[in-house]
Amino acid sequence: MYDAMDVLSRYGSKIALLALWLVLGITLPAVCNAQQKHALMIGISNYYTNGYKVWDNIHGAEDIALLTPVLKEKGFAVQSLTNEDATYEGIVHALANIIGSCKQGDVVYLCRIHAAS
Image 1 (tube, one colour):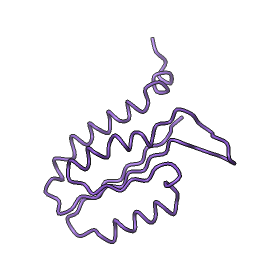
Image 2 (cartoon, rainbow, N blue to C red):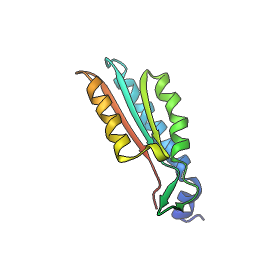
Image 3 (cartoon, rainbow, N blue to C red):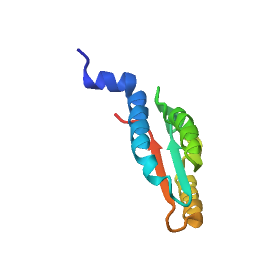
Image 4 (cartoon, one colour):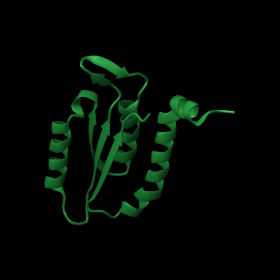
């Protein structure tokens, strides 16, 4: 018998990716008639505090790399921020770009993948 935390630590990113894939599969058909589709994907794999790596085996950036082609295939203009690019300033700048290009009827999909403990 597996402990829930053991399962999450071993398969957490795969479970999250599967859940996201299921959600996308359910919700994307509903937005197919949108004028434009925008996505901002934020994934962090490397966490540092005072120059020291805090966590290992976090695959947020890798998950973003796997999901981006799926969204592009569905017609989304995808902007990705990973690791060192996923700063406060980077996120605010990316959101401002999306807001500046959105019109009524557009769809915006925001996704952030990071560690959970």
